[in-house]
Image (cartoon, rainbow, N blue to C red; front, side, top):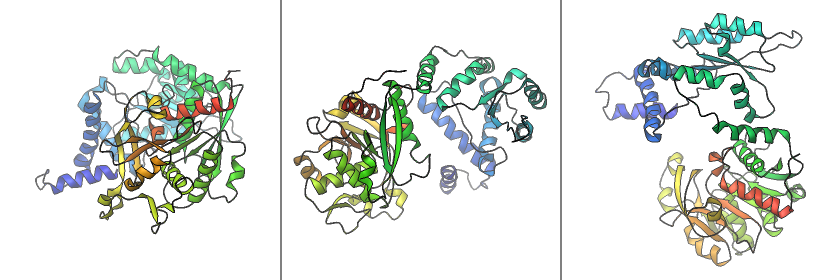
Length: 447
């Protein structure tokens, strides 16, 4: 929402509205629609999926709901389908499915001009026939348009559940399109395989400082799951608190280590200790964003014999191997110093290029500090391969150790986990998982 408001205010300052009063409707809602149409044009999209989070009635999503209400009238009824996700609780001791929350949320939607075409009711069990009839009657829908979003053991089973109940047919009929259902078979096969379990598993440690929050490293965990299921192996994630003093003990039963992204110096030295352990003991290692920066500091200290640190953690570091670039230092607004979004990288021959199967890659970024260009030479002279640089060869994007030195020691300044999919795992995560299997000499066999 901040981006939308800023864009509207910037346009007003430029005189785009010719002195007219800026209003939530139409100026803000028009900006939301322009963003949607812009994505359609950029991607040359045939079908666009728009998810509006939150609860109906929240102030935070009211302008987005108004914008998509207008979309229906702009694009035509046959070109828009509204699918409403709601909740059907079963209160303890009552043992009865309650439809009142669904009725009230649909009532609120109707008041703002949106009539759901399909309602998906989140519930711990399939909706009873009388409850479906009641919801359909109240919401002006046929019973076949009322589906159950049944609780399942894995999020990847949800599409299969909805397809079983006729979701694809409802979409085809409303939008007058034809869905290629064979494309979904690969997804279902992988999801069911993941759910059924495996004979053997690997244990991956994620060393970070946000271990108490289950969703802190959700994208990394899912990228690991995508890779493991493709290799027919089970995976167990072990969260390692980087603030613990005896962190080395936590690594005894770990098959591979990931240092994820983050900001600030809390747990910084614990991450460096963990990387040192991985490098010296031939444990597969993958560094993400801050993980690359920590790997550079660890290598600089223990291999290059430098008094190294990041200026983010220690502004007075003698060897500031991680620092702000000169062009960033004069910027007061911290947001202006960050690299956000996708950036191109040129890869040299090595492990990472083999994994991507190309010399040119684009990955998403969210960080502020960079590897200091003044130290590129000494790092490479001591055996670290800077395998990916920005096109101007100033910014380090990927580093690795050669195969003869380590089974898998790779780090990136980017966030490749954000592009990982169940059908197509992120290359670095797939390579990391393969390295663990090879290192353990496992035979991945499904039960």
